[in-house]
Amino acid sequence: MTTVAFIGLGNMGGPMALNLLKAGKTVKVFDLVPEAMNQLAQQGALTASSACGAAAGADVVVTMLPAGKHVRGLYIGDTDNKGIIDVVANDTLLIDCSTIDADSAKTVAQAASDKGLDFIDAPVSGGTAGAAAGTLTFICGGSDNAYERAHGVLSDMGANIFHAGGPGAGQVAKICNNMLLSVLMVATSESIQMGMDHGLDPSVLSEIMKVSSGGNWTLNKYNPCPDVMENVPSSNDYQGGFMVDLMVKDLGLSQEAALQSQSSTPMGALARSLYVNHARQGNGKRDFSSIFEQFNKKG
Ligand code: NAD
Image (tube, rainbow, N blue to C red; front, top):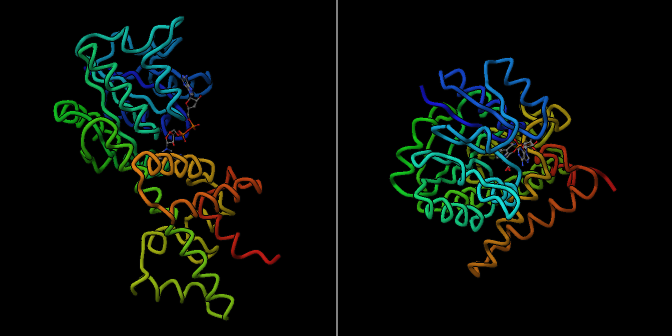
């Protein structure tokens, strides 16, 4: 039976690891937070006392961590600590599902390759609901061989799996998507609010725009105006969903990438600025559709 080491059991990693257990994998977990490990242990996971302890002896390692520094630190290690690439067997497959900068992903992929190991960056789209339902979209970067090897484990946790290109390409595709999403969310919010300011019913306006040329994902699935749509964060005081702080992180990554490639991304830059401002007003832990309030609240 395949043994998967799963490291990083937060909002996303916890339910993803649970889906691997449900798929019949032997799962060995590690997180800095003991409670996160205990919850998985109650579902049948084995626990380890360190990331390397979880990874040693595993067929596949999956990581779901906050940022690039965590991913580099755990895989490569430093002068005092061994990295995962130092302790795994030659044929262990390494999969990082975190959203991080493409350079970190490439650095880890190269360090792994130097040791003869396959590493793939596989950031996800679909949020906590997709993680729980096992319907995530994985956007992969790495060699054809690594991608093919990763497909089976990823399909235990997701519904759509794409190969965007070589190492780091998954991360680039992911931040392109999130930059576009942020722009759509801001533009949809200001449009609905302007209609409301002119006396329109936001539900009627949303139905009109959905099937008109302004139609987009936020109108179809994630309307930012409270009480237009059921079971979305805007109808639950913007709780749950995708945090403003994480959108700010992703928009920072997209602007760094734009600087590197000298790409012109004025809409992404403006969206980042708006989201940073929104976070600074105490909204960092709320869902990203709460940007609607920047247009809705009267001064
Ligand atoms: P989270 O903060 O809930 O979880 C991160 C986990 O990593 C925590 O449990 C933390 O204790 C653990 N961790 C940190 N450093 C560690 C270390 N050195 N060793 C072991 N464990 C460590 O974050 P999340 O919402 O699960 O997001 C994880 C990643 O997924 C991020 O890169 C995020 O951008 C991305 N992502 C999140 C969502 C979402 O909706 N939450 C959607 C898509 C992508």
